[in-house]
Every structure is written in structure tokens, then in C-alpha cells.
Amino acid sequence: MDTVAPARRTGRRPNFSLAFKRQVVEATLQPGASVSLIAREHDVNANLVFRWRHQYQEGVFGTVSQSATLLPVQVMEAPIDLPRVVQPQAECHSEIAVEVGKAKLRIMGAPDPQTLQFVLQQLLR
Image (cartoon, rainbow, N blue to C red; front, side):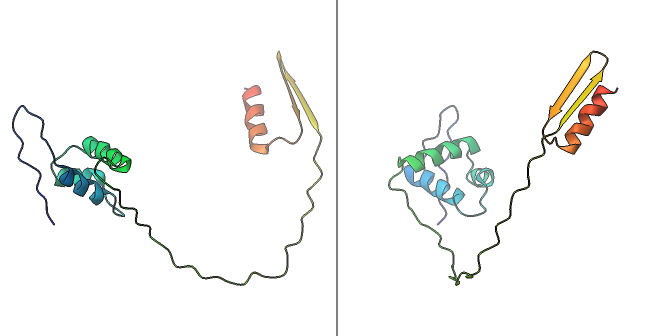
């Protein structure tokens, strides 16, 4: 069903029907649809279409059609063997202190090696 937008009169805002707005909005809600392309096809501004989409969701154009796409599901029996529990490694409690001129840096714990390298490079410039 091709609904053509009403002809525009110069100097006045067009008055689009609810049916036309609903058709444009529903076209934009299709999978893979581009709002800007659909707006161009119907000779309306994309920002206006986005406003219509918001109004559509609020029910301004009538009842919103709620159609859900269901995906196929296959139920499989879960394995009985439970994964082995991994013991967390003991935390490393170390401390690094660096003094370069007036700059002092103290790092406690286990710092990320890349971050530590970057900080040291900046201090030693």
C-alpha cells in the first residue's frame, strides 16, 4: 500500500494524517530499516519522523501493535559434572617507592605492568 504524502503548500506547514504518520513510523520499525531513507522516500524530515516514532510509542496514533519475534529454542540436558572450583591466588602485598628529584611515587599492591611502565617513563623524562 503506497500512501503518498499530501502536496505541500508554500508558506504553510503540511498537515499529515494520522494514517500517513502511522504508515511511515511502522515502516521505520521494520528490521534493517533506515529512518532517514524512509523519511526521504516520503518527502519528510527525519527529525519529524523521530518525533512521530515517539508519539507512536505513546499511543497518539492509536493502539500500538505489539508483535514479538520468537526465536527457535532447543532444550538440552545439562551435564552432571560440575566444574572444578579454582582457588584464588593469594594477593601480592608489595610496595614500590620511587623518588626522582622532588617527585615521589609509592605504589602498593599489584600494579598493572603497562600502567607502571607508563608512569615510570613519565617520571624519568
